[in-house]
Image 1 (spheres, rainbow over the protein chains, first blue to last red):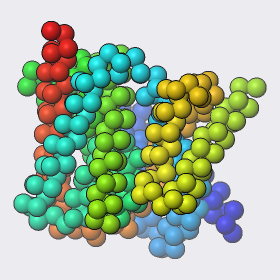
Image 2 (image 1 turned 135 degrees about the vertical axis):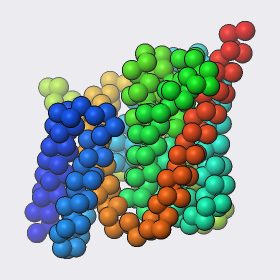
Image 3 (image 1 turned 180 degrees about the vertical axis):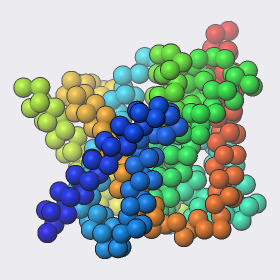
Image 4 (image 1 turned 90 degrees about the horizontal axis):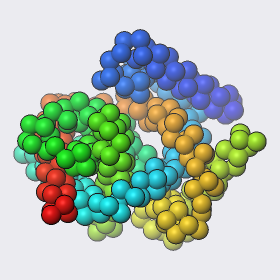
Amino acid sequence: MRALEILGATGFTAALYWACSVVQRRLRLSLLHPLLLSVLAGGTLFALLPESWLDAYDRGSRPLLWLLGPATAALALPFYRQRAFLAQHPWAAVLAAASGCASTVAVVWGLGELLGLSPLLMRAASLKNVTLPVALGLAQLTHTQPGLTTVCVFTSGLVGSAIGPALLSRVGVRSPVARGLALGTLSHAIGTARALEEGPLPGAAGVVALTLSAVLIGTGAIVLSMIFG
Amino acid sequence: MALLRTGLQLVVLGVLFAACQWLVARTGIPAPPGLLALLVLIGLLLSRAVPERAVGQGADLLLRYLPVIFLPPGIGVIRELHLVRGHALGLAGVLLGSLVVGQLVAGLVGQAVVKREKQ
């Protein structure tokens, strides 16, 4: 039964993602990321089915989920390959990522408090600019729901890469390095893919920024969880 | 041969993560094992204790298919929709506001530092 669940969940996940990738390519809409389409389609399907099906899918997808760990470690490679960029612009990279992370978290908690959001929603929103494999690890650490975290991370990636370039141009940020850093810090891998469209230098800056912001937000979350439990 | 090499590199990444999982469980370090494995691998690569060719192809393969691994937690959001009920607009406002401010601050700070570096 267990082997069947694993086989079924893995096959279903791969087939759903493949089908949604085909649909996205046909529609040619960059905002419709295949993963977003897959989440919408899969979520709708399981909402219509008895809950026991979702339970079985959860159990069967555990081995696939375990791969998130090695995949997080694999993020070291793109960062390592851009070490020359980091050596050239160490302060720009660190200060842009640190200020971007600090300001976005501050706005989440300030505005969230003002609008009466629950601490749970604010924790999920605080993880939005962390690349998903790290964000899911931090969600577990901070007792935040993984699905909610996934949605926040996605919103930041998709909306940030859609409005980011125009927003940065509007306030006069023309430096390719700074544009890549801003897109990578707030919109992780999706923003980095958008930065790569502007050129190799913004792309390299994006890779470095997404790793730095994952480490910075991760360190902050670990320290806070040590203090507050 | 290339397939075998990629498979072995995936095993290396898996062993590294499993070792970090063990370390976290053993010592009680309050850190996600994946983040720890990322930092350890960056350190190993930068110190050249592990050459890029020992993990490169395996890492590229995992990163290429990363979105597929994200699907199960993404679909799981349907169990959590009740948490957003009544707060969807507020959450959207917070996400958008914090995203815009963060992007502007990171961009402006990055540009100011790059200008200083050039001078």
